[in-house]
Length: 173
Length: 437
Image (cartoon, rainbow over all chains, first blue to last red; front, side, top):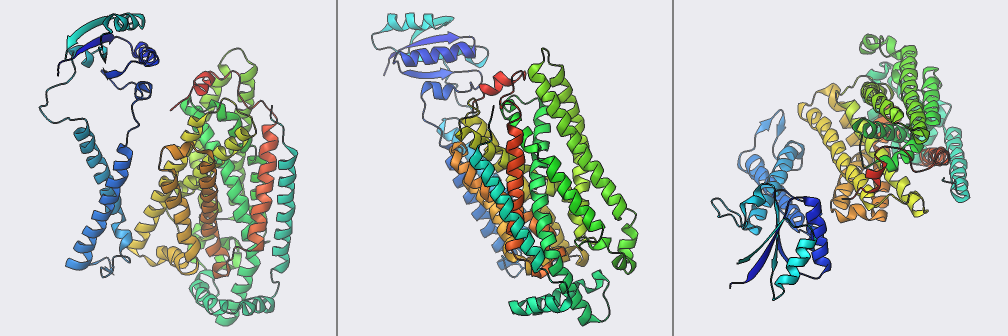
């Protein structure tokens, strides 16, 4: 599906923020904004749904904690009980303090790594992936706002020029 | 300007009056002879057998090696006589440490030149106003201990020291005179910084340059150095030395974490209270959110220290160290593990969600649990060595809490009326007003 989109370039994040608010106020749908760095509050201004990655993080943490408990129980209690420092490993509960650091570390490990992997999957990122940003300048010092055109090219152009865009291109997508 | 509402003032007086009553009953009910002590324990029925075991464990430490039964009874008498004193001391220290924790938080904000918090400075200064009355009361209790009015600190008893080689070795540090000198130096330093910084803070409002602000920044940085050393030594003196044979190298940090999280919790609670009464119009949910983040984070920090201390001692299992936890787990099982639930599980689960940190009543409810948990923390630190298995959270304990809560509310809110609640000329006040997450 080939559709026409308008690319508006900005060179300042404050100008961009105001532009986004103006475009939203004029009831246009912003397809995407490409930034060289994360802009604080941009997601709220664009009206994006809040992230649910924190929920996945909590669930991954629970998985990590469970893995640690099951693993230590198998290794230290069932498979090969050892007498360490006069504390024979016959009961998980009685030896629990010794396992707390492992339980903590695996909780953090699972939460952190699986959350990053989830983020990559959700953002469709993987090694050697072709970059999706339409202009290389968005990796340097320019911000780019992409809006789809529905027979309102001139209106959008005027609006975007008004918001302080430094350059406006129209391309096929 | 804030005006101390009559309802709150009356409430604080009622708390104090009921508290005095409870404390009085506690002192009246304390036995004065061995016979009375035995009658009290017999009345409770089951206490006697347990007390016996503890007395045996303590027998050597207390220097009552011979005449075992008589010494056991006398030990019981001392424990019961200690009870109202210990209840008073725990509550006095707990409310004092809230003010001290706030003072540390305030000094850190000043030294870091934080941009988000200047709107809360007057609240913090109001809470630290309690340092003077609270500090004097703690000092008087310590001085009365040195004067042998009670047996909270066993190393203060010359007869005990005479039979105890370890205490003789520590006598150069642990002796009544030096103990009180140190206490006076610590309290003097903290109060001096508080009063001076407050003066500069008020002067900044009326001045036409930032010299007061800069000077406040410098003295706060210097104060933090003094604070870290003095707070650590204070925790050895006032808390760790009730178990004079036992020591832990991270104890100062552990008590610091407790006072820090209690202090931040009280800042959040007072702020939310003032906001609900229509004051502090520029304080927004993001400020509460940040305070709640600190409550969450420092609760975990406290748990980290609590567990670090516990695990090393549990694992190495050296008799003179592990006795500390053996008595706590045997005789204080519920408060000991209950405090971990209240200070760790509760705040972690309730404050983990980002949105909940902005819900004011949620922060208040979690704050109440955190404060109760950290009262228990101090309770668990003082009681095993002073009253042993005769502990109970009854009239003297609750009376002491009510009395000091009333005193705390009275002095804090009285101090809040003394100056406008919003600093006028703090260079970061605009940033603080527009602070958003």
